[in-house]
Image 1 (cartoon, rainbow, N blue to C red):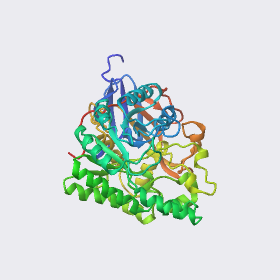
Image 2: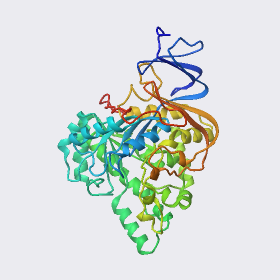
Image 3: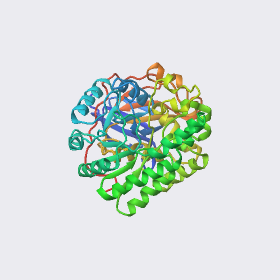
Image 4: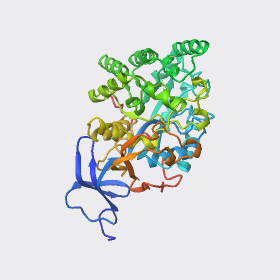
Length: 460
């Protein structure tokens, strides 16, 4: 059928951000969505028949780390996990080994590595040095960065520094000129350091003390600082990972005062509690830490109320040895794997709470694409958008960390053994299948760097 109007016809239950089109179809031409409909399907050169399955837009992970432990070679493994998890676009953090993305030259080098190594499309964050480097902000934005990232807490003076208040204020003022969002790792350093020192001195180094030394107050104090600076400078300031509903409430308060303030939740804060770090030990350590079961319920109320910007993973595939707890939780690396489990887990959580899959399309695809300026080409099943899809087979499954597509020492998951209500049957990137349910079909370099498409803030 060489004269067929579409290169590929995709069939299934289409999940849009506002409704589900049962037994619908998508016509794909030259890697873009050229038709959306239901009923009798038009002719095409090929058909991907997924009737009976859920056809989601490809997920957009607005917050993940490919290179924080292994450097840019980590792009290859992490994006394999993304492909297997129905994630077709990732927004990669800038705190890379050995050098963070603090200049247009480093940014350009990373783009070259994306084009050589990535299995999915990638957007990139930029950042600044501890001593400033504000002159590089405009150039990083011009290079196509989707957002900036800074921190109120220091993990490494070079790679992941704390930015002091005067420098952060000046940086926000420069970032405001670019129109790009600036995400902030939001923990109060002084409070966390003092609580950690006291816990160690008392011999309290068991897993639960990771939560006790990073209390909700450490987040809300940092939130107030950064949102005050948002109000002062006009920058769009965004909580990179709020584990407490109060973060979203504060963002809403500041929006009412005229600030551009927002925050995202990571999926772990919608399902994990303090009891889980006791069970998982080092493999449950992340920053901010898991909270109480009551806080998880408040997080869901924030999602339903519409105060949450989007949902991400904060995927950080530390090698297994760095996650092993041997008596001191403070010596364990902070971060979870989450890309390959993202789509099955999010779908499962919605089913368990009686919520429709449209929530997933909105919060895990459309909204992160908007906040990172990747719309209209990414984030939704819409005419003219890239033909990116996550096809879910529903049923009763169990997540198995052994099938994670990454290097051997990254095959671990806090969700190992968790019952799931779906699995990723296929992932399609720009009209080509890159995961068939059992293997990654994409080759390194299949993915492309996706520059920010515009300078509009999602809050404008």
